[in-house]
Image (cartoon, rainbow, N blue to C red):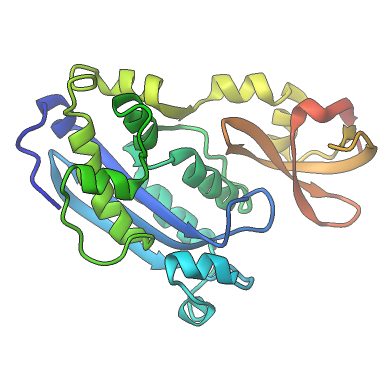
Length: 277
């Protein structure tokens, strides 16, 4: 990674966590899982901590995913799954830092999903999406991470599509982007608002009804009608476990009382919700 002497004092003084996840696929609300984590914490323009590990997804890694990230089932078989210890380590690493990723909604959706499985509400975070910034600075151009690395002549060690290699390159990409004339005078709050995402209670409260939020806090059984994508009405008997942010929407991870199976619901499809037994 390069030094950051060219950049504004405001951005240098902040604490950022740059991160990247390698996954089995694209759909965290389905069966896809994280298989590798990389995080770099930077304060005052210097690396102060790193966190990197393989994750056992408890499922086979598709060949098409391995072809991209070169991670095989053999490589992850002796590692733990995304258990509660990994959740705690990840959150302790992040703390109140500003999160930075390339196409950050993708990675945030996977992180929120893994945390929800352990009943952890991931609702107080701010992220910056370098892909959004790049599209604004370089409209009508290709803005994959590799394109930006080449554009800024960034030296890299190792192959892209491995989490730590991508994350190290992302650090240099970000500080180059925020030094662009169109961006350099914006505060971090303005950058988050224009080119990022925020997990906050206000947006969650708008998306998840009060009766569901209270049931999450108290592990209360709810009954409701739920309209599926194909228009069918299901009678649900469930306990809300945790909220899940994915693709700029809030979902709820729930436990089906009758089958003890877990799945996700979108609250806009709920009707006739009441406290059950």
